[in-house]
Length: 399
Ligand SMILES: *Cc1c(COP(=O)(O)O)cnc(C)c1O
Image (cartoon, rainbow, N blue to C red; front, side):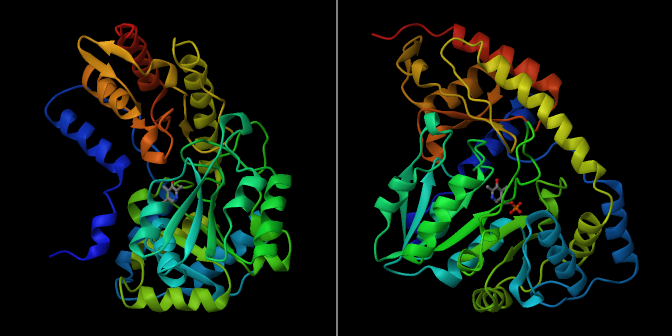
């Protein structure tokens, strides 16, 4: 018999769509994937060289559980330069990806009776990590008309005596929303007033467009910093998803607990990847600028095109690498006898008929939308958009 907690969770739906698309590809079908959330660029050469050197130098043993000092120092310097945040080594933990950092936080902070507020649409792993630790996710709906920023009144209305934490993600996966400073300041005030933690997932920080600026909520004052845990990593900024390096920074008592948890589960993150991460953080950053420029071009192209497809409307996302079109006007239409009733039906229809993989909005807690990753070549974006246009053109009115 499996443990009770397993029954509450599901496998990551974004990874599930990706594996279905990969299986179709493996059987020879030309599938265009807008499904997965990872940069299509290869890891920069100087980062790979650092890993090769680490191996050749025999840097192949266990390291300190929470990460090697040179990496912690590089992270401390990054947080200071980019975010205006000052941390000590004991306030940093390097983990096997930012997802693992978030899981360590969940284990250290959440328990039975605790409520964790998650603005919706949300990244798929937040609710399940809360559930796996016997706490309760509390969703606060956000609206397209507010650019998907949580309304402070709605947030405050969701706070109870049991509220332990709020999980923020700016820029957001899936919506591409970026909080402005004034909105974050209001959220910070509420966190201090009601004394809950803010888990700030800043993994898309480097991908903000049109001159917008990413601000870390932890940077406003000591009171909010004492209640914040900043999560970041190398996966998205340096095209290093497979290397599995992420980190958390926050109050030393929490970080110490997280380090103890990690010491009893994975031990240190991969030693070679840690050396690569030092090179990524301290070496030249021209790759980040190049990738940003490419994503920006694709963003404008994709969103522009989606807005020309009947039934779809799409806000211009301010950050990350996702378009999040509203597809509610399509629901109720038919393909033969088949009714496209919701985002799941639509995503499945597009995969099977258009051979385009997208993720249904329901996976992120809002059925009115689809998520399309534009971390894929402009060529594929062009072909994919035309396939979507054609497949949607083949739908007939319902009833
Ligand atoms: C990709 C992603 C992560 C996890 O990244 P890792 O590869 O585990 O470092 C965390 N949060 C969000 C919102 C993401 O999209």
